[in-house]
Image: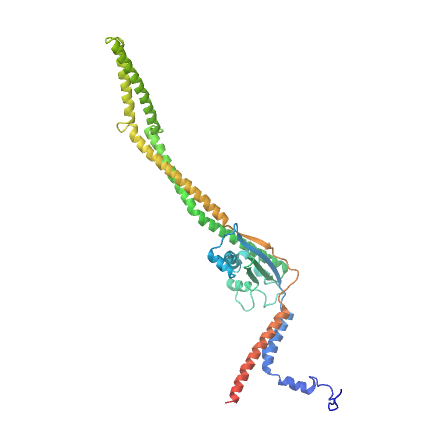
Length: 386
């Protein structure tokens, strides 16, 4: 099977000796500057200098007391993966990364000391080297250690906090969640206040109107000396009716006596009683109808007050029902933050991912070098053909 024409040429030459030095010398200096040097610097930083960071994660959901039914547009958006129910969660996300969120956080945790601990490298500590000491700069740099995400399928938000100790990471994450809960409570109070304020104002107006009418009725009764003119007029009418019946009986009796004996001594007494009854009936009628002191004008004024009071009572009842409905609706739309997973206390640092970061630096530098080399080769080729 061995071919006699093939001869053993000895072992393959290795990359060593003068030839290896020549090959290394032919290595472009740009490669060393663009690829080797950045990778070496990154290796020194990530493997020897970079401070380890602990990561605490928490998961929560922002929900209403009752599930609100989405509109047709909302259902269409959810059909393509856009959830309209995530706006409340996004409000909490924006708060966590905002200046207000940082201010509230600093009331609970000494954030600046936590991220400037002794032993933390100068490129990781806050505020970073060569940066100003303004609050806005600190907030932007602090947000580099925060990650807030939202899962549109489950509605669960994830908060990820990096810090240089496990306790600090858990403490900051828990304080941020407490701040988010405070924001939701303020949103609830504002929403309830806006929804109920108009209804409460209508109830107060209706109560004031009813109180005014009742005060006018009290003044009327004290001034006229009668509780209910209509009832008084009714009682007076019943009395007139009884007196009229008695008067009719007396007149019948007199007619009978006069028919039996025209000069009967009973006739003067009967005539006197008839006149007394007629005078009493006339007096009672004058109390009901007659001049301005009679009950008739008082009844008109009193019935107007009664109508006004009934109208005020209906307005108060309607306003109270509207207030109850507004309060129920406000409670139905009340938001809550439910913690699905409490902030964890990590037992080991997971950031930075040193080898992955180093590989990323090398790949990026190599890509930049390759693109530069292609540009350079293209320019050189074009010059050769000129």
